[in-house]
Image (cartoon, rainbow, N blue to C red):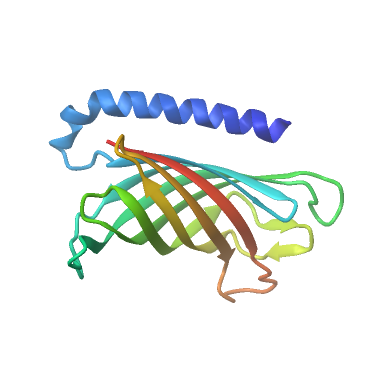
Length: 190
């Protein structure tokens, strides 16, 4: 229940950010730093859940365009998340972590930026402490975050996607059990 309350709170914050962002879009576009979209994600792994808000900056590339109008594009994803594990140190204890990450994401999409897409990315994340939950231990606060996903962008610019996400430190230090999530993602493109 606590997780759902925090997810609801994060969703409300995300909506407020979208509202403020839409109002400030014209003024900040001149600087070139305004995000092109904002996202909210929830996910679940084995005895662990995540909630995440993110901001995306589109690369506006048109690589490998097909006759059907699809091409390879990408974006930067800067995100701030929260993890809640309920088997900390393999006991019935909670572990809450803050996570900040940045990921370059490649997306195969329609040139109109509407309709179905497939994407993947490998980025870097920094945790507030090392992860130790349900016999999965990650010995560093620095972790790589990679994902593959599919989704659909509606005509109203709402993006709904599903991702498979993996975190690990790529063997920098052991133990490195990693963690896997199924993530539901909602985003709005300005």
